[in-house]
Length: 498
Image 1 (cartoon, rainbow, N blue to C red):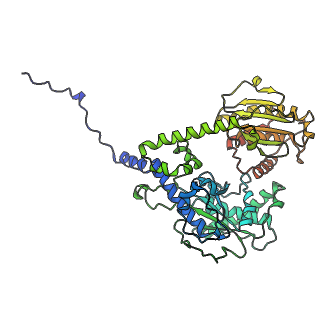
Image 2: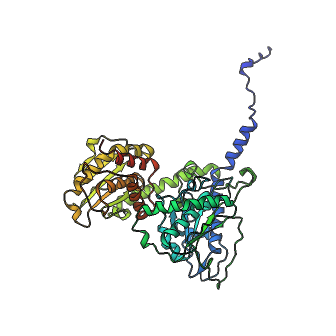
Image 3: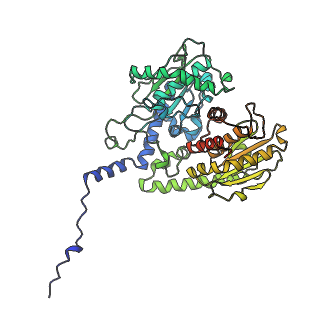
């Protein structure tokens, strides 16, 4: 019996020996797993619930529906006869840390506006819709989080304090406490001095918008921020007799950091992920905060290997239900947001208008369509712009025809009717539709909101565009035109005669 031949050395397969770097990367990816993120979000939401309970005020409390049970379980046994201050989600990640029925509003304070030596007061994100809510409830709780390496996001530590001082000076210019700037104690005095020196310029930029909304904002005391994190000591039960007041002379803006600070790496934290909800588009697989809270228990009970498929199924079911609901709806105008007397925006689909005094402009995500196919009727235009950044860039090329189409409709005399409307729609109802509405507002309407036929002598300034955008964002705080969308609008308005 002949022995087997020796194997060819080139056919030998040796066991793979991963490097230390690849092992650490693999461990970190497993720590940042989808299940760990969702579990961390629920743990952080429990802290938000405790903070809401600790800062409650006298008044009847509504426990919400069954969907809030997981969130309410994080609250201490709040005394009967008390209600929490409104929870405000600082977008984009704040909404993950509270059930939808607990969210009183959204806010848009950017951390980049609070970065060291890049401090800014945003005239695009005015957040003035919060002022009346703060006045009516003696404060609000604004919720946000940040990833490993920081104890609180710059939006809470610096952007909101700047906003408070600027709003105080705009609404209560004669109040002796309005100029006070409050920053968290971990920031050095040099930062306080540098930011304070910028406040007059920030105030001037707000006043330059000349918003008629400012005189209507109700505020009897200046705003004052204070900060709470998972490291803070909270009163577990304020008691039924506590009046809930935090300041005698200020309205509190409670800046709540949902996530606890991780000192080392996530691998040392037993699966806890700081700021787990941040950059959700990179990990959520289509899951939204609403969908998460609707199915929180079953999602966290699912094995990691099945979680992605479960989420895909839930997302598909929700999308089908949404489409069925829109198809069955006889009133698509229910989601319409009025920006001015004549301009509104809404999400797609946008049906062919039936009223002669309504003009519909649909900006779809279909691949860029030929210009000669855009006009479907004198009151209906449909423009394929593509998706995301491509749509924003293509908007620049489409705006001349969009404005000309709307001008023809408005020039026929229908604007004399108070119900005449130009309705612009896009997939979200918040991005390119808002950009197109901004261009229409500048191009076709004067400073009094009256229609005008564009002439050769017409010119636009960045100050005008900024003021019109401020008015739109005040009317529709949830609007979210991207930087590329706004660049397209500016480019069109500055060069429209070319």
